[in-house]
Length: 301
Length: 301
Image 1 (cartoon, chains in turn yellow, blue):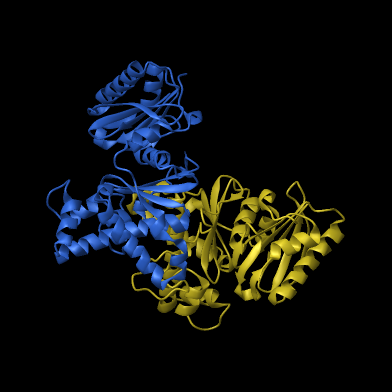
Image 2 (cartoon, chains in turn orange, yellow):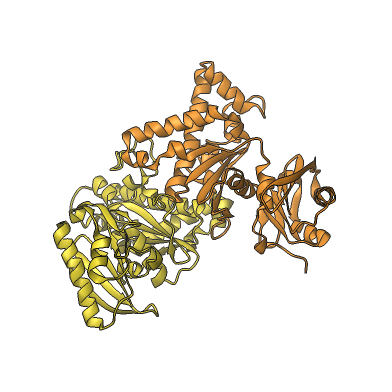
C-alpha cells in the first residue's frame, strides 16, 4: 500500500492506494498554516491512514504548491502555506520510517491524471488556476526536464508590451490564460470570476465575450505549444478553472477546428481530439502523489 | 561498423562509424533528382563505403529532408529531391541485407550534435535553414513525440495578423526566424541574405538593423519555448544560418541577459549558457544517421 498526500491551501487530502491501483481509503484534514501546523497535520493524516487501513504502507508521496527540491524533499517556498525552507520530506521520513517523496502539486496532479485516465505514452496536464503551468508525464512517470522547469508554459511571453507578469516579464501566457488574468480583466468577486465572465458572455455582454475569447485563445495557445514542442499525445485541462467543463472545452475545440480549416499542418495535429478535461470527482493530486516513483524518494539516514 | 547517410539537396554525405564512435571513413556523391537517381546514388555510396572500409556494417541510417515514416522507412514527400511515396528504407535494406532506418534530416542532425558535442541528458537542436524546426534528443536517443511532431516550434503563431506561413497559419515563428523570413524581409541575393543583412546592420543601416533584431528575437523566442516547455539542458543552434556564428550567438545571449535583468524567473533559467553553436566542421546529420537506434530499423522481409 502507498500513501499519497495533496497538501493544499485549506486542506490536506490523503489517499491510501493498493498495489492494484485501487484507492482503499481517503482522509481529509485542515492544512493549517506555517511549518509547525503543516508538518503536524501531515504526520497526523498519515498516522490516521495507517491506523484505519491496518496495513503498513511501503512509501509516502506528497504534493505541495510551491518551489520544491524533489531530490532532497525540502520545501523551498510554499507562500500560501507559510512555508520557507522546511525539510518536509526528511521530517516525514523520520516519523514514519518510510521512503518519502515530495513534489510540486501540478506535477503530482499530472501523474494522478495519467493514472485516473489510464493515459500511457506522453501527456501534459495543463493546470489553470491562479497561474498557468503544465506537468508532463511520459509512460506514467514525471518528465521534470533538465532543471525542473518542464511545462512552465505560463511564462512564455506572447503579447508585446502586455501586462506585467508575476515572473517579472510582460505579456506572458499566464497574464492571458489563468484565474488571475480573468480577475484582472473582470474585477468583481474573486472566486467566481470565471463563471461570471462566462455567464455574462453567454448573456451577450460584449466586454465579457472579449475577455472570455481572449482567455480561451490563450489556453488554446498553451495547448498548441505543448503539442508542437513536446508532442504529447494529449493535453488534460485541470486546475480550478477546469470546473468550467464543456463551457471551456467546446470553444477551445472550436478554436482548433477553425485553425485546422486554414492550415493542413494544424489539421494534421488533430488538436480537438487531443484536448481532454480532467475528471473533477477524483483526488488527482493525492492519487498522483501515491504514484511518485519510490526509487527517488528521501529515506531516513 | 555503422553507416550513416545525409541525403541533402545537392550531395549525399556518408560516413562509416566504428563501435568506438570514431568516424573511420567519409564519402560524398551528388544526390541527383527523382526516385531512380536518389536510390541509385544511395546504394552506390553505401557500396563504396563497404568496399573502402573492408568491413561489414551492422546497420545503415539515413537522414533526408522531408516527411518520413520512420516506422516503415518510406519517404512520404521530399519535394527538393523529387521524391514522393518512395520505399527508401525497404529498398536499401533489400540491397544491403542490413537493418535500415530512415529519419528526418533535422532529427538526425540533432542526434549527431549530441554525439559530436558529447551532450547527455536532454537537448534540442534548433535548425535554422529555409525553415525553422528543432530535433529533441534525450540520453542520445530521439524524442519524436506521440506523432512525430516534437520540436516543430517553427509553426507556433507568435504574430497576430503576421505574414502567411507555408503551413497555412499566419505569423508563425518560422515567418520571423528563418532563412526564408530574412529573404522576405530583405529581398536581394538568395543564399547570401543573412550575411548581407548582418553586414548592413553592422554598417549602421537602420532597416537592416530592424530586420536583424527581429530575426534574433524570433530565434530567442524559439530557444525560450524549448527551454520552458521541454526543459532541455541545452539548445544547439544548427542549420545553414548557424554559419553566422558569434554574430548570431552574441546578440542572442544579449537578448537573454536583458530579459534576465527584469525577471528572476528568466534569470533562474540561465539561458545564455544553455544556447550553443553546432560545430560547422562535422557532418552532424550523417553522424547522427549512423547513431539511429537500430532496434526500430526496417529489415528485409
